Length: 312
Image (cartoon, rainbow, N blue to C red):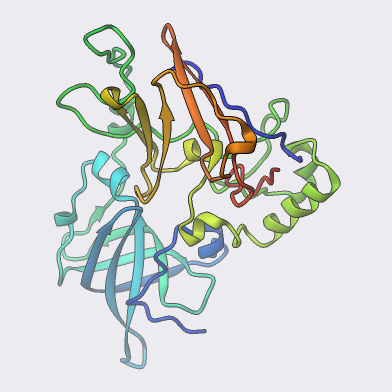
């Protein structure tokens, strides 16, 4: 796919048990404290290989011989499987040593930067240096028998489109704004470089940044909406239902909701007739090898980008 057309209304530019980690998709920056490090060692008691966050749990004994159970997040199952790891790579009872970042809250939870199987000294869940390079090799564009571009995988294959090339949406002339993978600015003085904000929008954006993106609707398992769907870290997937005249766009981070793009030739609806939704109303058409999509009818309940961009 070379281009996706998108019409949007203008940018107005307590203690928690470790056995019950947050099930939301809250950003890494809001969940974990990268200024602190923690080292844990213990036996694995449970493994949750669940999209979008994989966890294992370990019993950790402190200096006073008290045992506490920690939840350790160690990646996204889609990425882990792409790198050759499986749920069976780790077993209940295995003793592991974990180094990582603790949660910002008082919960016994951490994000693993390193997981080592103690008895063998083997590092687990690391991305092989050659795996991603091999995956990046360009393959011929898959096509349907009639020659039209096939948005999904070729027959007999499966998988999601890769991660987005950009961390967050910014003004196209604002190159190289330092930010982390969540879109959190490393220097708030760069706000004016992000977009030509209106005063109210700048205030909203700055508030979200100062709060470390904690108010992100996606963190409450609400749909990402609009173009942000294509910025989902685990990628996304197209399901082409040619017989129904539509294309479904599914999230790699958990297919709890999806966007429908109608390709049956119907005209775009009148704005006054639409019920505003997270994904709007989308109609598409093929222009040779380009799918052009016209989308209107978005609500204002989602962030335009993971860095907290507001919109109207």
